[in-house]
Length: 379
Image 1 (cartoon, one colour):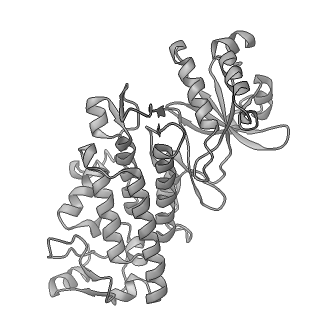
Image 2 (image 1 turned 60 degrees about the horizontal axis):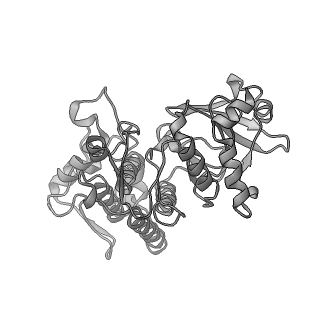
Image 3 (image 1 turned 120 degrees about the horizontal axis):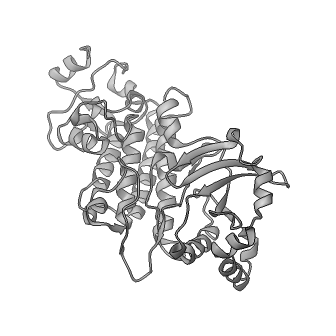
C-alpha cells in the first residue's frame, strides 16, 4: 500500500525532480511514513497543533530531536499530483526569514504529508485576541509584525523564482517564533503564477472575512487578492476585532467595511485598540489606517502592490522609532491627558484628516472645545 500511495502521489516525479536539481537534496527530503508515525506518536490527539480547511497539523519530534510540524493534507485529486509536486519543489527552495520553511514530504500515505519547521509561539490571531494586555504586544511590535509579514508576501509575489500567490492570508496563518518574529505559513491554497500572466482563473478558495470580494465574484486570482486579505489583518491588529462578528450590528459585522466607513465618517478613534492610541503617534496611526484603506479597495487595480505596502510600513516603523527618540514621550503626553479604555476618542472637524490636527513637525495636537468635551465624557 505504501508503494501504491507513493506512486499515486507522484513519488517518482518528485524523485526525478530532486535528482535533477543540484544541491536540492539538502533542501528537500522525502520522509517515510514510519518515520513520521514515530515522530508524531502515531498522530496522537495531544500532538495536534491546529486544524484548518486544508488539513490537520501535528507536532513531531524526529530521530535527531528536531521538532517539526507535520501537516496531513486533505485528499488530493489525481489531476493535481503534478501541480502539487511542482509547487512543493518551489516551496522547499524558498528561504526567507519570515516564511515558514517546508522541509519535505511523505508520499507513502493516502494523502501527502508535509513537514515544516516548527514555530513555537502560536498564531498572530491568538495574540490579537488573547494577548492585548501583554507588555510585549505593543503598537511598535504590532507594526513590526505587519512589516515583516508584508515583506514576506512581497518576496513571494516578486522575488521568488516563480511568483506565488498565497491565497489564504489571515492572522491564523501568520505564526510567531520564540522572539515574536512573524512567519507566513500554510501554503495549502497557494498558486504559482506563470511569469507571463498577471492573473489566473481558479475555484475560489480562502477564508470569509479575509477573502477578496473581487476574487470571490470573478474567480480571477491576482496578487492584489493577497493585498486585500493583508489589509484585513492590519485592521485586525489595529482594532483587536475579528474579521467577522455575526453577533454585532449589521454595520459592525464585517471588519473591512466597518474600518473603511469609520475612516470616511471621521470616527476611527472609536474603534481602535486604546493601547495603540496611547503608544503610537497620531500622525503615524493615521497613515497606517490610510494604507489599510487603500489595501481594502474593492477594485483590485486601485490597491497598492505588496511591495509598496511593505516599503510604506517600513517607512512608518522608522518614523515611529525616530519620533520616539526625538520626543521622548508617547501620544498621551503629547495630548496632555490620560487615555483610558472608557474614554471617547474624538473625531476632527477637518474633513481632510480622519485623525485630528496632530502636527508631526510641532508634536502638537490641536483640539477645539467640542473635542475636549467628548474626551471627558463617558461612553
